[in-house]
Length: 334
Image 1 (tube, rainbow, N blue to C red):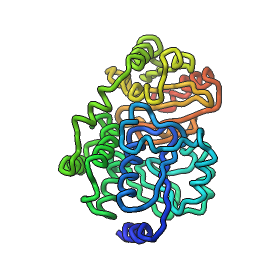
Image 2 (tube, one colour):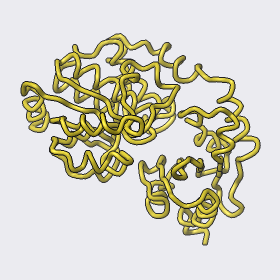
Image 3 (cartoon, rainbow, N blue to C red):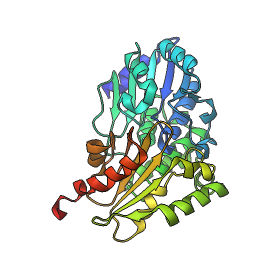
């Protein structure tokens, strides 16, 4: 409670200029949190800008304020200026600077108060740290924070839609990490505040392009493989394949979850070749800690059952490393 009071006093100072920073390759929770917080800060009279390490996914650009985000890679000079001028940096849905890509070093050394709002384990120190690994999403935590700092009357339809987007996407449509009754109480309060639940569902799940569906079909038909020794599904997709199907950022969202619907598969890995690096997404069932696998071998981390990583090795080397290190998850099968 003292942290909330301190933050409230900090935000009440005059002429405060803030920036909102999500993690690289922002997902529904990160973009939803940025959208909601931008709306709240604007209503509270606090100057703010959203600076994202890279582009927001196309499928989330319908969210209010998403179009105001400034991609660092395309506007480095402006972003550096905004970081230097800021009094406060809100770090959303991540808890260390390396999740901000190239701009992370600039944020780290900036003379700003860092406010972390996140639900991932092992956060760094910050002037204000609001971290809770038990919540479904950063957006759920943000909802509580908004209520405590400004009051629930601050939440209108646009903000409610953005918060619900984060909760919905980070729980896979309430299929995982969503057994806490408080999550559903918050959804009920969002409905009371004007949440357009059906509209949000349509925008997230019924807004595909034909090229995206064909890419997903290709990935499942041609690129999905099962490890010969372990119940691990692996989907490696090259940069050229993504180009062939007119890939837009976010087109592969959710793909890594699909192999887990196979009865005997316990882990799924999506490997995508990008221009600068190779990205990995990990998902698992039950008591299999893919976050430790990601941290041990793939410069990553995340949640127990959902994690990510990135590597500068060649695409072929990363794929081989996934196959060779899968035994890390199944020590009893050695």
